[in-house]
Amino acid sequence: MHGEWAKIIGDEIADGVINGAALLVCDQERELFTYTAGEAAAGIPMSCDTIIDIASVTKAVATATALLICRSRSMIDFDAPFTRYLPDFSAPLPGGPVTVRDLALHISGFSHENQPKRQYFAEDGNELLRNTLRFPPLFPPQEHFEYTCWNYLLLGQIVERIAGRPLTEFCRTELFEPLGMVDSSLGRPVTDDPARLAQTCGTDVPGKISDFVAFRIYRDGGCAGNAGMFSTARDLGKFCRMLLQGGRLPGGGRLFPEAQLRELTANAMPPHLPVKRSFGWVIRDVYHPESASDQIIYHSGWSGQTLYIDFGLRLGVVVLTTRRGDYERAKRDRSRIASLLLGKFTAKEKKGFDKDEFRR
Image (cartoon, rainbow, N blue to C red; front, side):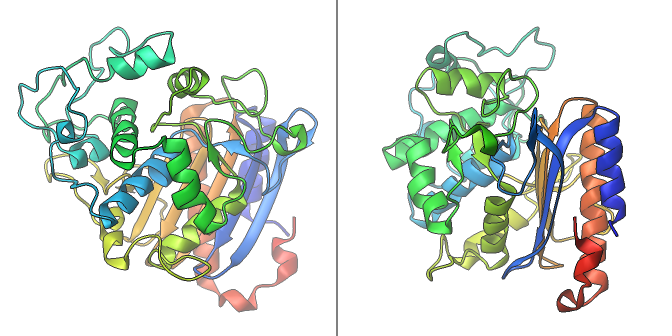
């Protein structure tokens, strides 16, 4: 017997909204449930080991976590002006200093509002990165919320400046390897085996970055903090378990001190703005799962992925899909799926589940 989540996924596949899906639920110690359906790419079934471009989930899992690691090592002050770390930013800041935290919360004032295209856009990825340092914010900091990749392109460059190495290398050695996330990487998948790779929307082959900005940057030898991470449901479950354990690593030690976790879990938005966000994560918006606690954080990617970590319920939910249709329906359905799974796994003792009920 499958749950209602399976019907949601089946309907989405039938209606051309997604090609396939991989779901995983974990607590702080282990995987509790997995479910897959549909295709990762033509003729390739989806699995929890399918490597998927997770689009903007990169912002939360890779870039924000890298910055938290740097902060735990006293390499960065989140409340300092970001120009302390990017002194070659050449545009004026008429609204006053913009902090690293302002960038992470998307309240920096950098904006594409009423612009015909992204101001920093260029066909060449290296020029695109340089351009992020050339244009001023359109709003004063902390007055205007606008979710924009610009903020995380700057944050990715900050990691590289303070760490003295590429974002790809920093995340590999300081995040993915310590967590045993063997199938996770930035810029390109860890394998070119077609049986392991998903194809996401906006790409012509499996294993390609869907975000056009990150694609150009990585293609031309740079690193992008906004998108371009590849991972699997199983690897993201490992990331969830680390956060649910307060930063603890599987082999002992910590990725960062538990006290640092508050940066990811506490609402840091000015009260007059419409959403609640922490450093790199959403706390509450219109996609908040109904059965979640008030201690959940989550982030989505435009090509069909959302990661949910509920500290109140002590559960992580990974919903990875290969979207090809209706963006709004797909995003709301991922929230519905997470709500159903969170409700199911808190309604019973975890150790008492009937395995047949959750068998694919």
